[in-house]
Length: 271
Length: 74
Image (cartoon, rainbow over all chains, first blue to last red; front, top):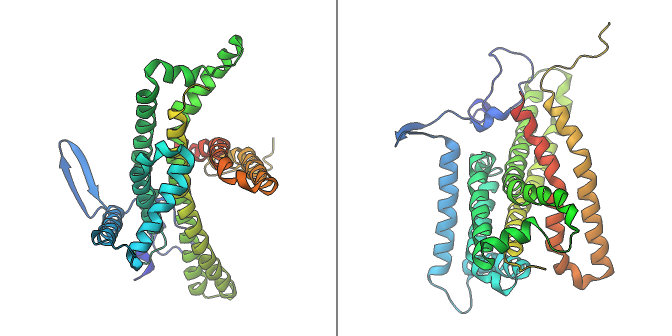
């Protein structure tokens, strides 16, 4: 596969200089476009990667749990321990025993994010769909609606907003300062930072890998003494691939832990 | 007035660099405190992990706001 297929380049043709991959990486040519109810849809390879990744994940969990044994096989063991990391390590630990009913959502969220993040280093895909802002936004919106809904269900509309906006034990005049900060941090910045954190990490990580990969190819083909630097760039792209694997799993974990921390905060009664 | 240095391109990237200083220090302090707490009392590790991630998320917010600035101001 030539580099031009994988990398969306914006440099003019016959430009001898180094053509660094840019954000345009995340805007590939649509494979198909159609209009549905007045909304314009464009299916790009990123969408296809998302479908395949999600289908693989769904297939894996269905296949692993269809014929469950008391003594688990390899696949069932992997699926069970993966689920138990989220169920026991996140849901039970962060929210408490009450949180076990959120374990299916948290686990689906975690595995959806992790498989789509890892697409960033899988050969031939090599672009994380979560690097498109729309996907983290949808996930963060679900979390936002969920924790507000849980808080309102658990405490009632009035007490929920009162506990969040007017925390007890604060001197009255300080509410002038505390209430806007609490409002901004709980209802504005939470969904915003949740989505942008995932998006930014995936975008930056992908560009980092793309720049080292493109740099390796460029340094090898430029045809002067700079070829001696090419192995350095290649080594960096290998090291960064492993670093990205760490970041991808960690970001999925952070997303899930923050989601459950927000749910736990919404479920808490007044202090 | 002579021009000593010229900056071309997107100034928002410099803004991101500046906005990353504070969160960088803040996130470092958050994790340092968590490590210290865990070293002093290992049993508290699971108890304080939630606060670790909450504190980390809150300190990182400014860097995240700074990250989107180059995309908005082009």
